[in-house]
Length: 101
Length: 434
Image 1 (tube, chains in turn brown, orange):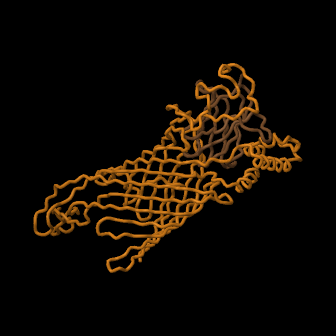
Image 2 (image 1 turned 180 degrees about the horizontal axis):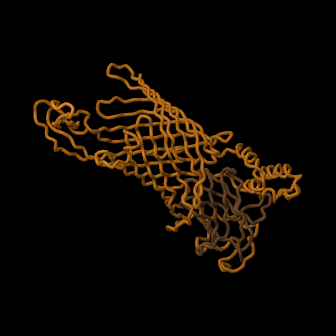
């Protein structure tokens, strides 16, 4: 499935950047998609087969609450979203999602 | 030596993003497109192109990672409002409309068209029903570019160990509670996959502070952009009506009118470094060039007979109006400012800096140099209304300044200023025109 990760809310310059792993994520496990970035003015597109995944990411260049949303490209079908805030830190954030068959 | 204290009281909102679905505005190549795949035709990682749309096995763990394709998507940003009033009677109202320009590059580019009006006669004169009192609106445009920090890779052993530790502390604290959602017996993979937000939602309110201790040891900028550049300009057209002719026993012409356009160009740049204990270092430079027109300070009084008082019929009344004599004069001014300081990279709750500035006016005015010590304190934080995300914040900016100007007799004139202002969230890294 072709997917799009976007960012809503937050400060104008706030940017999230991370990697997609198959879930559950084990010690030393490598990502399957890297450089997944979202900000005001940009989204990231990637494709995944059905399965369970986790988007691990960190935040920079902004403070406050924001939402990371994952949708199917083209149809806009909602897959998952994560309401986060920098008051919970800037790293160690995760969006768990499942790509349906 | 002159001393002045300016207290500014402002109402400001911030530049939170409008929480609505983004509007596609033409994608472009990603900054690191996947080899052999692209948007719209990208094959699932670890699967052949013919597998698209049909069930496919999960990507094999040994498959090499594939970079995502970054696309530009433009969107509107939440407008920014600012109203400032000062005890020296100066006032300013500004509204700026933000628009993030879609770009697949590493930074964020946004433009902020803005309307601004200023007055030296108090807030009440910003908007007046009298034509001769209302102030013209300045039109401006600011372009901002910020470069975020590229942080470390995810799932590092250090981050994993830190999250397991925080989870363990949370599990220990509620171990006696049978409803505790955190179990010490959970696998390390489960503990490491937990987020601080989930720990807080599970009533472990200490989790953010425990995690902050881990993050403070990392050389990262957190909320600071690596580089932020802002440039902009504004202009306003003003009409001046004045008398012409030499003062004295002569007839002055009162039909002279001139229209002039005043403008301002400005640029600002901030570069940041990671600091320690949640703070960061900030180097800021600002440059400003303005060309303004000022009405002549020479006035003459025009009076007409207006009868007499009822209680004193022998009196003679006159109705008088002051009129400007002489054409307006143009004043050019260039200012430069460099500051270096530190700020709270975690919550942007404070910032201080020390720096130098110089003003270079045109004409007979003398150049000046000065020292300043701006301090920002976050005094307000409120949630955005429903439908929007982000916080509304306000900063109190206190700026002591000392300015020296050389007089004609080669002595120095000292001016000490203390400016206190309330500014919006973007004031932590002010726009070029702010």
